[in-house]
Image (cartoon, rainbow, N blue to C red):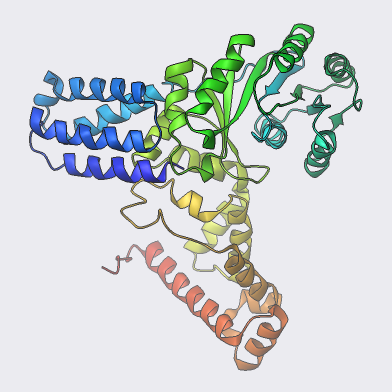
Length: 435
């Protein structure tokens, strides 16, 4: 996300860091580049104008002039203003209701039904609570079936009454949730191809009946600046508590995310980061600003690792590494843990300085990982524990068993051997970078 904008802004930041002094002339050049980068990313013109004005005024202020490293101060100003533009601070969900009720609204095609599944999955993981999905989209063909399929996939119950009145369905669902000990109720409402009076009256009636804790608008970030009109249109009729931006992973511009809060005052609470059922994240303005400027997002990286990786297993593997006993069984276990973190290229982008190290454009084919796993699984437990015993005849058997070539088996063993040597050097404190 924000690849093009991130690249442009990072280039500007790199240039300005070389300045020994910030002047009206050189800052004007920088601000021109920043302005163009934001406009090309489809950020609202008024937002761009205000943003660049604030940055320029602060960059020419007393604090920067007296700074030992004015370039670094400029970068800090841009990051702070970008964070403010994105909303300043993350706004948490209101989950105090018993059960907490979340009503999702949006236009047809925004990804609302899929998002409700992702959100319920996230809430269950983060808070160890029991969610209930409610099918109130009784108009779109197969909408109820789609939600039931998502519920089945996630093992989350779906409450539905077929094509009945959505207001009655939502009211009955709340009562059902109370009687059966559900902590969260997520209501999937009907979307339309455009905002119309009929849609809004129905949504207002549902809101009046159930008084939800959250009314979240799901919106396709690829709509660009039209998204602002949609947000305002819904917000005029319903008191929106937040926005969920979908498909942000597929939008190289993403300017709507930089305009939403400033123009509508409705906070972004979640962003869609992939099509998978775990492809949704809480939106944090400061972290997002850091990622756009190439500063990485170590906090998110650690959080993902904490969620997915078994701490005891990781500790055991680390001790075996230090003792020089790391074998292919440990390697296989580590691979399985890493797969839980999601696509590795997405994780590499969270590392500070990823672009400078060339990690931002790394493409890792999931098939390659699957091939490696197949090779290791074709080995006997004895071979995995003692790779040195794997000679010609064993390599041939392993290659046939995994459906790969002997050359691939050789390559894996060579890479594993190099990795073991590197680990040994690191544990002895003798490791030196090869450049």
